[in-house]
Length: 349
Image (tube, rainbow, N blue to C red; front, side, top):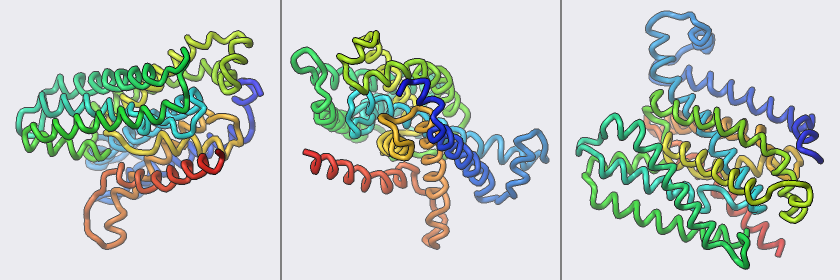
């Protein structure tokens, strides 16, 4: 099946539209719930330019940045996972498993802790530029280390990527622990909360960098659809079909890494989105690889739904008016699926 045929495959198209519609519906619900509950019709009225001043403040300034960040982070993580799984032909090769997120997190935590003021805040420039830039550099460095150490007989061994990635992630996590120990208590607390993966108190300064990354890199990734289709068949076949394998792999690897790093900078290392969304999208689409746009919409849906549960789950269960980090919810959903994938791989051997 060619890239063009997959792009217009009815099942894939319908799934993508359905996931997008559900994500939008959940986003509207998320905008309506909170300390001040609003009717969905009032939310829609505000989004279309109407509404009174108080409602507009709640929706546009307090809630929409959080919801937008969640949607964009879900897209970025999901597409990153889809690209890495396709390139490695390994369903376990997601940025949170192979160390990309851990590298990005370590670099970002270094900025939070070392550039902190001791009051839990960092300077405006460090917050707006330093954290995203550090996350990208840390993610790229982790990817480089995993790639170099995974080379066997002149080529990257897909089977070694996950094992070496786990080791790189462990090293990065130990660096994070050290930074939290030496840092100011307030700054370290802020970093620890960020590490759980949270959308709490997100502002437009968090959403905009992730949005720009998605706006630029998702269309760029889609231009490599033909290369991705060929790479699924193996490097030799892809080369015979005219794909410049090394160049395509490098470009797609950079795209995947930057997407994951920017998502991590925006909301912390939200676990398992990049692992679960591509695999579910691929299975539902009955495709030979995770379809990018369908995966992107499912990622947005997954994070938005998880954030709704994180914000309201404990209150519904009458445990208390507390919020969970969204990463706790995604981890609770994703960990069993990871065990399922590992078990399936073991049975396949």
